[in-house]
Amino acid sequence: MASFGPKTVTFLLIFYGFINVAKAAGVAVADAQGRPQCTLIANGDKFSDVDNILEASTVCGTSENVIFPEGENYWIDRKLNPVVHDFSDNITFWRSDGYFIFYQNCRAGFVLSGDGIRINGYGTGGIHGNGDAWYTAEKGATVEGRTMPFVLWNVSDVTVKNFYIRQPQFWAYNIMNGTAMYFDNISVNTTSTKAPSRSAESTTVEKFVDTMDVHNIRVKGFNYTGGDNCVAFKPRSYNVTLEGVTCNGGNGIAIESLGQYLEDCSVKVFVMDDLVLKRGPVDLRYGTYLKTWIGELVPQDNYESAGKPRGGGWGRIRNVLFSNVRYDRVNHAPSIYQTNGDNGSYAGTSNMEISNVVFANITGTLSGTTNRVSLTCSQRFPCHDITFQNFDLVAGNVTTTSCAGRWTLADTVTGLPGC
Image (cartoon, rainbow, N blue to C red):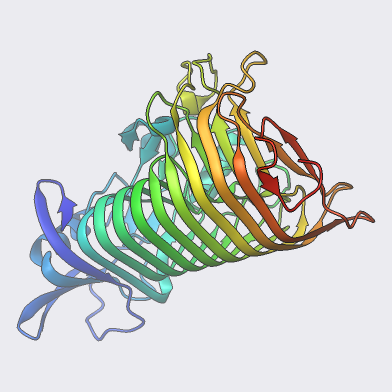
């Protein structure tokens, strides 16, 4: 069921390549095998389409179709919880009007909730977030209040296919409290024309997807161009499959931000296969990595922590597989880092235990002069059962990959010399 304000409905959103309707702005209602089918025609010229979208959800919202025809651009000028093509560029308005999300002090501009959600863009449908207005205004330094253009919250049995998000204002997709979800043939592109970043051509703060409190998620056939994490899995993400993913620039693929809050932040059972990580408009910095917070509350001054002390969370990271990963001029080899949020006094205190992690068939090139894998674990809960198989990353003239480990259990890191 999908929630639109107080009403609960089940619906199917379709981006059609062609549909034979009169070209009049508003909601066209037709009979489809005895049930109503709504087609949304945009108002154009930056006139709001929110009321028409809400009308369609009311008229055709119970087990019916809502169609967004190819070539239509929908202008969304206020927060919307009822797919959307174009968000307004009024960033002052959006900073104060988004749905507040406590986790990392975020905002949402578009939220879908419910069961049995099917979204198919047929290769031409998607969301344009007008993110360049944000990138330009903030000049590479993210300010609190950016809205996410596509949030799936309290959902189950969800399929999103053949869909794009271009110029997202912030994280492209955010999934919270989701079960049984499938994403196929998805693309995300964040390109800044003016923001001074690590490159003049790309932003540094937009991700494909962040997950939290999710079970049974599969992502297949995904292409990302941007400057932050390609994919980031956060607390209480379980049974995740990621396959056929290409990341052009950014940080790479991460299991991260674990232990930031005083709660159980466990994650487990990840299968990530057939990944391509390569330099794009900006560097690809970290490749594949795991990152947790220190195990004590430490004052923070960044917007993600709302200026409050963070850290001290607990839990386990286990049963993680990275396999068949191709590196192309990535800055760093795979890593584990468990000292995020440290002020210089709390290294080694993480309450997150990492175990049963496998890096298999990791090949390709690094852009620097070293191909050493770095494992900075927790002294309280040392890493163990970390395995490297068929690991062949070349950095300059250095062809033998080595490992530098700190706070790992003896004889439990195998496959590379040095740990």
